[in-house]
Length: 233
Image 1 (cartoon, rainbow, N blue to C red):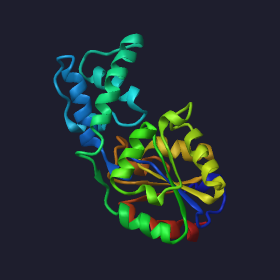
Image 2 (cartoon, rainbow, N blue to C red):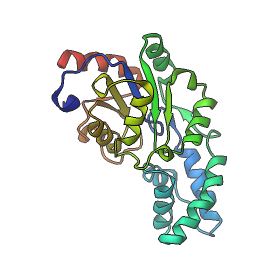
Image 3 (cartoon, one colour):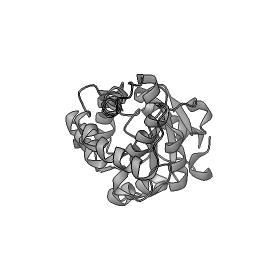
Image 4 (cartoon, one colour):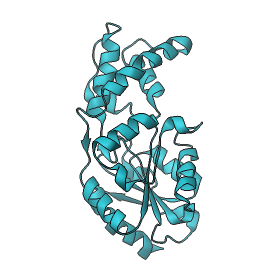
């Protein structure tokens, strides 16, 4: 356990949530978008598990990984063009196959009623993230939605987390990051806050190996995990 560089963990005033693999299972929609892009180049589709392993790092990185996996890696202007083609395709595949992860609505309701401020911090484009959150009627719980295009450096850099804290007017020591990947851990550490990871997301490395403060099976376990962090501090 490495709570915010050794500082005691207090009950958080704010919680920042990752989106893909944390609040929503968006991999089926992302796979549909990737395969539509590939089909436009007469390339065979990728399996869902292949695409799931590519999630994280933003759309450009997703496109780069998809073409590499198809045996036709793209660089420079060719990658720029494929990324431009992907943008409208991606926007058409945001909510038809995406589902909430277990416990999301129940736990966000509980946290909201407890007076804890919340935000989503994701590498997904901001408008896309907002559309998904509006679709699932989650925006009412959120004081900020920070997408990857709102900052210069995506997670694992801490920039998006720090921007969310500015908007929520909360200090890092009073904030908890909840995600599913090494990028979430690195961003939280860079911002100076505690971090909890959830199993069942998109990390290709077992989350137990990513040096989070705690690991939970699902969001249903988040309130008790927060108490465990306080007791251990």
